[in-house]
Image (cartoon, rainbow, N blue to C red; front, side, top):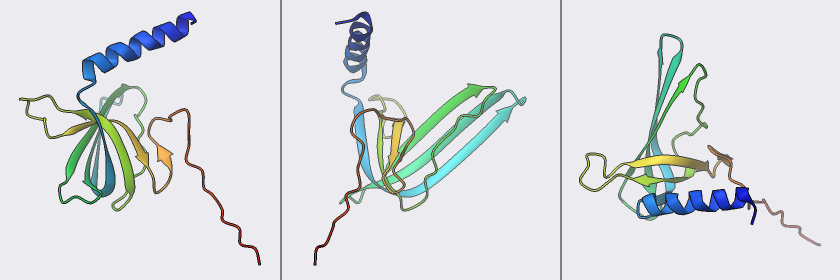
Length: 134
């Protein structure tokens, strides 16, 4: 094992040890999207995105929040509209805290437009064409 592989393994193990019980994902249709952008003194940019997702075969709604602050450059976010099918990966709130029902977004995969917020290496979804022979 090289130094880089050892370092990444230690990093992933410590991350899973710290957040392992809170990591979750939600797949479903988007009910609503609210994007708030704020600029302070033309230097500091704040982005806050609130997404309400209705999971497949469920009556409940999951509230998901994405927050990013960035100096000098605007943080970007993929385009999501109402009705899109999405997979949201994130962390559940801590027990006993005020945001325990909310999901803190780490990655969003829009299955309708096949775009990711954070590109994931490995398997990508491939579209298969069906050929008909006469």
